[in-house]
Length: 203
Ligand code: CO
Image (cartoon, rainbow, N blue to C red; front, side, top):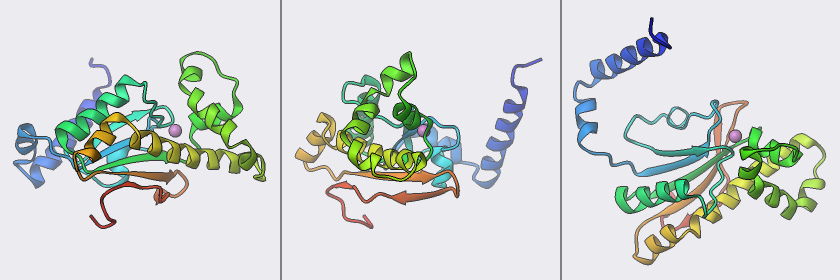
């Protein structure tokens, strides 16, 4: 008896469907990976990167962590950005947060411990920076949603001011960093219009 046999069954069906529609699909992907997009999102199981933008394997380079935080001291995130920008040559980096993010709520409530608490410190700092705006909102839910948005904007700035991205712009590479938010309630994405970069919309 295999562990998680159902997942292997689903995998065979998935691969079979792709090959039935496009027999060379996997052979083509074997040879080269050339996505134009880097997705930086939350680990939340309800926000699966490829699915929500309808992209196939090979089209999206993905980094996910709790609450889509991009500290410049995080070797993991910086390595992903470096590889995506310098080796793959992606032209768009999308920081995608989501409303009702558990990590954002934990930072607002501020009573957790361990690795998650340490990880969420930048979010607690961000909440403190925007305390007046957050406190002026009418409900805990609105504060939660607003901090989700503020977090996306802050992480766009963090990515845009990273050494890797600044160096890419200095050498004239086309590169834009975008901030989006996903709504669990209806499955829709919204552009927060905090894009930084040298690519015009539609490019
Ligand atoms: Co989340």
